[in-house]
Image (cartoon, rainbow, N blue to C red; front, side):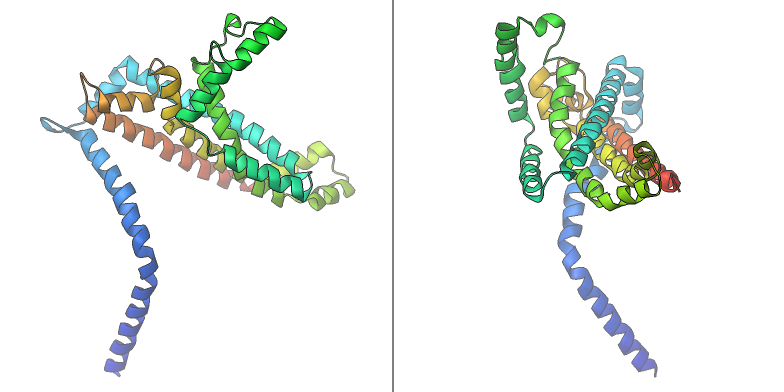
Length: 292
């Protein structure tokens, strides 16, 4: 009987081992490109010439330059996340009312535009809205309005937010569309039959259904904007202080490179992302009972 138990245990272990085989490439990928690099960054952030120390973190919070770069990145990411979520959700709601053929065409177009970012996107905006851009010149010639005379500048914080919104709106659209599509028309019709007004429907039924997806989408938009580098660098050439540009300058600086300080900034930025995810999960749990 003991031998039978050992045999059955061995068979179960072998079956379990076979089930793990498809996950081996994923585990290797996660170790090579996520866990090990993150571990090295954390180690580098506390490793100095004198040994293990939190000196890099202390320097960051004692320096106005680094604090301002963190603040700017957070403000830009929050603004882009809110604006992108509003426009993307509105677009997804509008798309629901179209026919199947139009929906497929527009979804394909949105999917294509969501992949257009980085330096090519910055160059496209410079061609359109630069000092001598196509739209800038046309507006000045046809309407007599000098955009840059009004205080607008593509190479300012306004320009950065505007360009970030371009690749955030399609992402928000694609993230919110499944949730909006699940909000079937017959649910709204049933609520109206029971006497609910349009405002009451959205306050008690529509928004509570969409809220988890909206919170999750905002978190992704926030993270996407916080980590963006190429677009902002191509627009501002490091003139505006963003944490992603600051990290790049500390790593590739020709005069005073400081990988330890760059790693500490990266860890702080990762901490903001983790905090946003935790807050998102808590809000979704607390919001689960809204409208019940």
